[in-house]
Length: 294
Ligand SMILES: [Zn+2]
Image 1 (cartoon, helix red, strand yellow):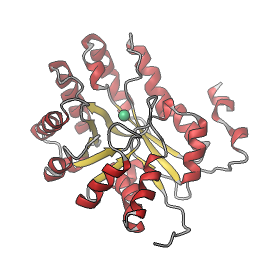
Image 2 (spheres, rainbow, N blue to C red):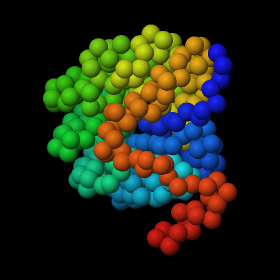
Image 3 (cartoon, protein in one colour):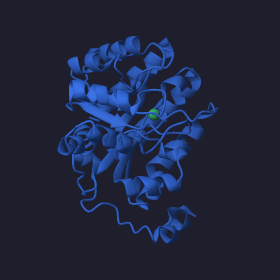
């Protein structure tokens, strides 16, 4: 197949920019990434007070958005207490009290990432409380499947979402693999797929899913974070899919139109011409140098 010279546009619907460098932003921009959604997540080091959640939420709502825009990338985020930290119930309670304030902020396009880690009663309580908050605000929901017990976790998550009356087209079940994609699509939800260099899905394994299921209600993301991950892996996976015969217009829908359809153009409010960006002038306009961040 002849290579088309036109650069594709990418929206990575799950990436933790908080733990990536400005070099990553530059490389993402040059590869065609023009928008990202950053779900709030577990920072690795267990947090000891609710105040650190407030500061973290604030930084993904404000600072990270400005930093990404400085590199030509529109940044939006999702707010949620992650399942792992739901098990510290005292802390969880305080975080859930502050969540509504952040869910109402500009640029917050969903509740997430929610879900299960060890599948405990405390995790389920925090999950249900946050699903209810999303429903009150008509926000989409991003849930992630646990690393262990993935299939059981995915089924249980969908049971809970259905039990609470969530419209399946407004929820992503993320980190899906061959084990779960069919079950997720059959029940009407969106299936998110994370490509990682080794763990989760490799590009080859995602390609097999793509050729089996197509792109309806399918999303692909890098979930790049502080672990061994790659913020360009969606771009690389698309190149791999093209080599295997996938049509470029279909791929473009997968990596741009699909995530916008899920989160909603009216919530994403992406600038028609993209963020103003000049790679040469980028250092001069860096957000850390701007007065409002001093
Ligand atoms: Zn994540």
